[in-house]
Image (cartoon, rainbow, N blue to C red; front, side):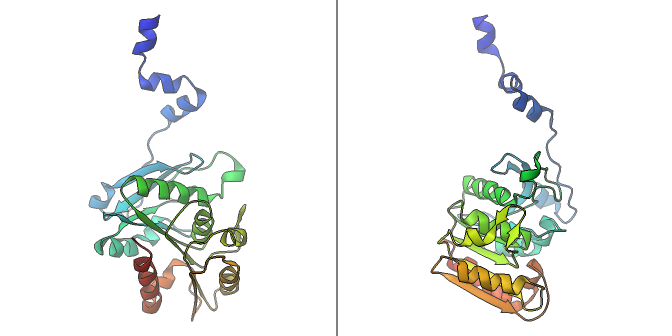
Length: 245
């Protein structure tokens, strides 16, 4: 009996618990987005959110300067990919990923965690640090903006960028989050994008950081497509450069 116990494989030990058995039955997540090139697909990362939801993303670039990019609703990692490529070409290690319930990632098992996209960002921060990032700047659009702002209050990062975050997403209290952190922050929104410019102003006012910026741009573009404007792109580029080690 003792000999048998010592020879049990790791897989068998994991399967001995209900949670472990469930993990073994799950097939690895498959990256379905066609926007990812063959070379980029070889650098797909499968990782877990802080509450163990299964996520998938792509790492681009290398080096100690990390950037995590969180997409907005009705989209997936593809919306960030062109900008991620440009950052990688300039020497950053970049992680783009699909939030829970979007793209190729998994879903939360309980309704209270279905919208906890901030947990996804926490998982992304952990994995990019494990892969060599010494500094981490996080950026997100719309629901991804709520995700990164909440995550910045829960984990140490070097800078956070919000492109049209709402004041609340599901159970995420974004106003409460910005009042609790001291991380450098950049808040962006378009002046005719519904309530989002007013929310951006309120987030800026409530933000406890002494290093914060607010930019309200012309037009009605929502979230990440704001980067199509050369001035916005330059502002974001500069913020990332200044807050990367």
